[in-house]
Length: 245
DNA sequence: AACTCGGTCAACCGCAGGATA
DNA sequence: CTATCCTGCGGTTGACCGAGT
Image (cartoon, rainbow, N blue to C red; front, side):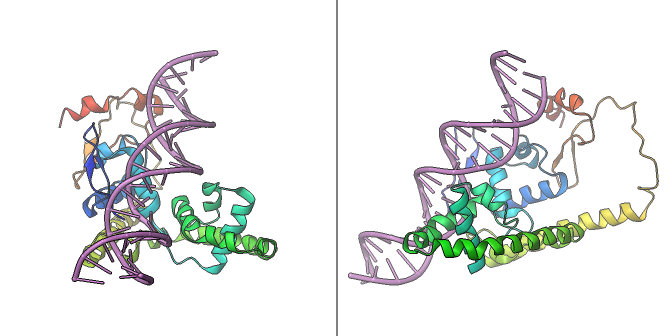
């Protein structure tokens, strides 16, 4: 299930993702967020297109992503939602915050489609699961609230969730790596919250008229701050700035 | 042991639509 | 109003894997 690596006419890499690329992408998004998918790979040091990065993050690297192991209840909900919505995978996936639309789509095509072809008790499923959908949605809403309060738990990936073409030791080290990143972020957050950060009034330095991307200690290119007005960012020439390094 | 074939799933592609200049 | 950019969606493909022969 691993596509062979190749390069397009622009020299951008295609095919399966390596552990190194995953680390770069996860590190960058954890630190700076996905401020612009198209520009992101350039600053994260990845020879990938933005689309590929986005897909990799959403389907595999984002915190709390759940893969495989569908419960009977989940299956029934998917079946019912599909009966109502059709191939609206993103809408169906909205009922499962921990699963991606791509994964649900795959699960449908590989498993559930056959079930709908063989089963004739669709009406029973609908009546039984309509109640369950509400129940699961309530649970998800509750889980989301908890997630907001326990963000540091989200970043932990299970070894089974890492790319299958990696050795287990590599997968384990990648988990450690993600945890390290988060611990670092947590430490920074604690430093901020314990200091005078929140008590000091926020002041905009009006003298600053040029904010260049910088290279941080990880070797990642730090984009201009998201707090800088958009009209300023839009006039910023990233390519020109990169020539300075 | 070698081969075939269907199942599985990660990743790519093209398109639509919203946002912005 | 139009053009361009960017994101997200759904369909499809390609390659691995395991069961069957």
